[in-house]
Image (cartoon, rainbow, N blue to C red; front, side, top):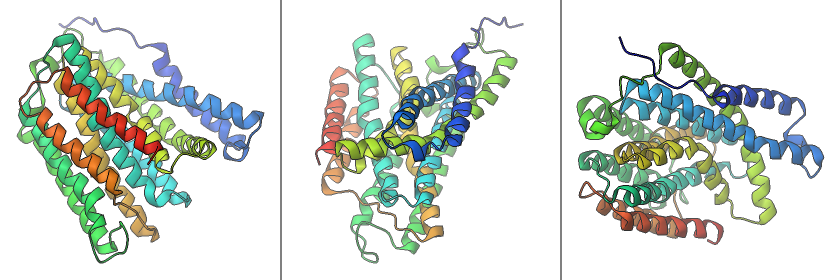
Length: 369
């Protein structure tokens, strides 16, 4: 019989989700949005929102990791990816339904920011950490190649091709084009999930990712983590709209371009996977880092874009998709460099630095287009 040597649940893991739900109820009763004008109530609520929201995000990370450790790879990373995608879809859909001035471009800005943050910032940091600690971290070329193949196609269909179609003016799709691209996006992402979890599961796992059966969480921890994960995700979804309001007001205060809002939304929704991916890189599990990072980028396009398309088609709202020329150049550069980085099955610190330089350029141009 296997001994239970798993650690107990940290207090923050169950306090943070409940505190976030309570904060949402209290902030809503006080008229959170209405009191965001300069004043003690608005400033106090805005300052409290950040630690409460990030506490819920970190709690979601913990509970998703407990479940992921139990079920093993690649299903474990899929749980966390699905959780993060739920947050992102809920946030973008809520902003679009609210009729916000930036609603037409938020989906594009968020998807682009996620792809660039993952493909350059997060992957670059994981490779750099792994290279500094383990010299040449290894991964499966077949798995990384599968991720990149699907990601290049989906990114091109959603962020580049709308600039060159003729039926609709501007960087948008006509309704029939939008419906077609949303359908093939879902189809391709579904096929990828089948390959990842059934047909070629071995492409995405390494011996290091096999769970240690001596330290698996007991069933009661698994049940509690499942319930608290749902509570944490619900809290994050509910508070995300309020977070977007605070970010938008902050952006206006400093005079930053509208795409900065999408960048901050991307950072928020990527936090759970970023924490887990960096931890995996520190433990010489770069394959797990790639599963988390590239999986989140694929899920963002594969699930967020169709959801945004459905909302836009249902409400008859415009959906601006095509990137500016500078964005297309950076996206193409990211895909090219990623293809070279993942060509041999091993990486080193220079690969990580190259990705981070591209990420720094992306950040600079986000504030100084």
